[in-house]
Length: 329
Ligand code: NDP
Image (spheres, rainbow, N blue to C red):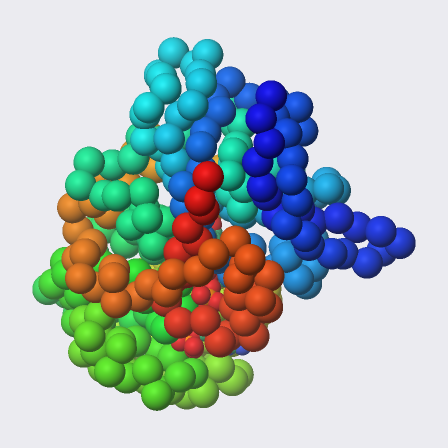
């Protein structure tokens, strides 16, 4: 039994707190693979969990962190052996099962994917759930038959995590990318990632018409609410929007007009319970299609001690791109 450090969320008398604690192996939850965690990240969902703004955490105490990367220390799972580099996104990590803000994790081997060839552990966490979800969105658009020659692709929440990686991926794949952001001060950053046009998000965040001018054939939406309704109403005939987020709201005040008059499709994207074969494809494509220099441009490096303040900042929309948490141990 050895000690390790982890961030722990506790709830007492209805009030939630988070503290860096010393734990031992006997505190870990059940699983067939034990991992020395080297890196994690902070996603919007981690922000919701740590601030308690939404009921992401389903049991207390909880080690938050929906992502981790590290090296297998011990395993009784047939696919993994000590020394293997692995990545884990979702599957209830940081919600129902102890998560990534910890020097050690014990998890189900079935949840893991091998660290893709060509990516380091810190790069995999610069991608994280946000980037892997952006890739799932791109895969959904491709499966719909859409390609760059058909017209532009729009990305909302563009300066955030999902948005930044979506812009970089789509641009690398040859799309004309229209980035929608509330932070027009990030114009240089977004153009650096490959955006060809920038739209102020206020143009799309209010109530719109059932049908608008056709502006794009494809889209990745991390925002929901009126923004998603407007995206749909401005999608060209036969196009599609991949929806994965709710940064503006959980509602969708839309009409059926784009669906029944323009054959537009709304493609739902979930990363948490996404089946393993699709995860493997997404990670292989990320290793192949994501420009490393652009990934580096999105990232800020922090420590475990910085995570609570970063969680607050991401909920307030003050985080740009992706955060990488380095975990010594
Ligand atoms: P970030 O906070 O990094 O990015 C969200 C971005 O949305 C912000 O940076 C901001 O972009 C924009 N935004 C914030 N508030 C508003 C608002 N009120 N109106 C319009 N735009 C707003 O979060 P992530 O990238 O980690 O996650 C994005 C969303 O995707 C979240 O809702 C998250 O829960 C969801 N998600 C869903 C997954 C799934 O499996 N379906 C997986 C991963 C994420 P800007 O400053 O450019 O305007």
